Length: 348
Image 1 (cartoon, one colour):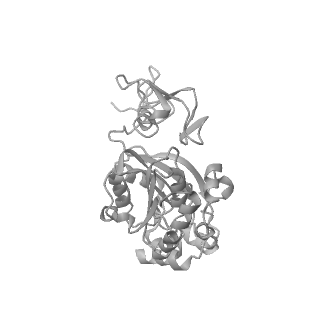
Image 2 (image 1 turned 90 degrees about the horizontal axis):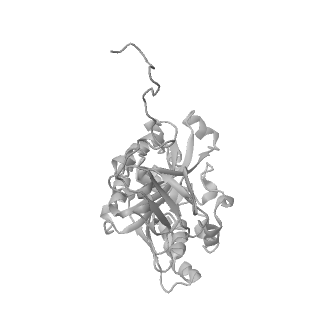
């Protein structure tokens, strides 16, 4: 299966979101109010050409420089351009000429709708596996997003490595994609519909974690997930018993993160101030940090808050001078029998 097949599927086969054969697209009722408000200002022509599987609008992005990998007709780019404000900027990259034409046609209209003096969004024709060839400055982006596109790539490691190089230290790759509960037969990628529907290219979730770590993102954090239904009977038969999930991950560019959740006796206190997260800040699926509460964290979580754009919104307790082992309830448990006198097999 070639990139031309994928380009044709999204440029010529699909006329709009309603043509998809899975329930990958998010239900509008699940969208937070501030994102729903931004969507209400976007032209219907853009909204009808949305093929994402999640929300890729992380918190605290006002003034940020954002890159969207596989931006399509630009829905997420225009939402992000609204939320980063006039002082921020958004760049979208896509390989599908038809989608980019729709996106570019609405730049001036969206700029007027937002009341901006000049556009803060631009679109580039290119491949997400070849980010280094697009003329983008290394370490120039605060946030990189992607919405149900990386699974389509034939070289996912190249995408992740390219994103690492373009992120500033402390920046993050925040993206939604489709994952499988097992490794899928390579022959499925010869089916243009299964591939275009983001199923044949879906990574086995554990292979993704290993790829992310190899690219430099040592501690991938799962933000949200939901099962996906395959509504077409013929497609379901070809896929067999494999199950699929839409999942959003955040990967921070922080050198030296530990491979496990290590306890250094640290804690954070959320001071508030992040728009739309005044009472509770959700870092990931396992870290909902209430305002004003002393919240014990592992060393990696401490750094994800202390060495990123979130730092001004937290007080930090402790350092790395002491170590207390694996963080309780988060990571690998000690493998040894802790009760005295407990014995296992007959090995000497």
